[in-house]
Image: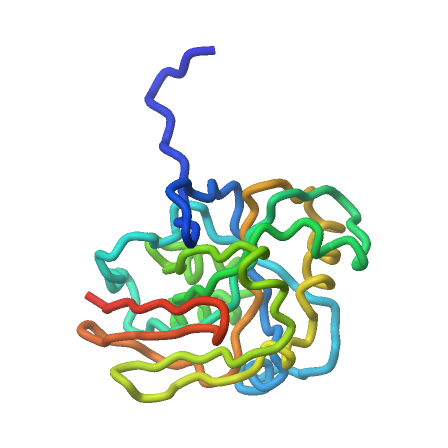
Length: 228
């Protein structure tokens, strides 16, 4: 069937060592998946069931143009996260089979309009305006499993203008990567091209125009973004 308007081009993430891209279908995010971050956000760090929200594929920032400070906010926060890219999916995926779905890993930043999020929480409204705005998720290249394996531990960090802001370890995740995939597949039918942002360690904080933000997961990937 022909389309009445030109279809949007696919969102492609670069793949380390490859000339082809990883096509993104959906972007899922895990909330409060590190105990220390749950505490700093005013929540109980006990192992309650994970909760999820979404960004849009075209929210991913894959160019080198920098992160444009968004409108309607005065409090944008950084949240560094391990990124998981899926090559297969399904529904009700057993934990033991979850890692078979993974194509590769990267690092990303979940930029959040914190003031809008606080207003939404207070009013019991969705977080879409706080989380799913344009260019809100800079993402590194994807590193295939064949190169990086399945990282279960490792330093995850973020600096602003060279100052350490966030630092943690992947083994501090409340819900580990196989569990996240399995739990997510109980709510949604996962598919090739899905991307999961797996939560952030403590130390989230504001950025302003002109800030140089660097972040990474040691042994996986690194990312540098300038706020403009």
